[in-house]
Length: 314
Image (tube, rainbow, N blue to C red; front, side):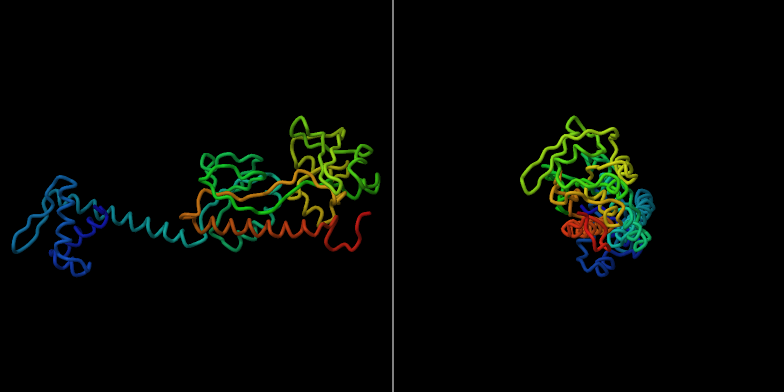
């Protein structure tokens, strides 16, 4: 039994005083309307209507159900209006899990997205490892590396990202630039401490893999602290493309040894399901895809410093 439909028919029977009138306006047979009311009576175990050949009248139970049924259908109509409107409009909150570098990349353009959709809200949950979207109440997340074996998630490839050795102009003016990873031993390096192999910088280049062990007087387990030290001109840092691309384009940092890249990984946007995906989530996913498309085009350009600069670092 469709409870909502049966309650609607019951209310209209009471309002019109006629099974046949409700049948005509609903474009169904009179027996179908009669059956719906009978199913309600059987479902609740009470008699709802007194029936005579001349008229219908409510029992006490019927009157009680009528009052509550009207309230229930009003609530259902409000739910349909609210969530039906949200389904087709860009409104409400989208929670997105992102690594630090991705948050840095996306934040400037997120403001433009929010200006285009004033009823949209975005919450960035910044975490290097997003394990469980459902447990963390996330609508989508950006992951680097294998998309995982969770078949309940949709994984959409975005771009291949790596890490590059970068330094500020102040450092390069003072100490020069390495042309090969083996020369890093003669330079001041800034270490991102993320495990026992942090001091080993493994590059892929024209001659294959090059593993260099660097030493550092400054290290941090936070990528933003390492980036800040590089921007201050302290030394050379190995940082992810997403974190440094805007610094390179604005000439705050230089990409060194562009033929040698490290830690290349595929970036994915993952989300629970395509089915019944709210429009607000679709809009944010489209934004993420476009932002990474632009990032990928910048990386393919291979430029070592700002796009407006005609010179190249030798």
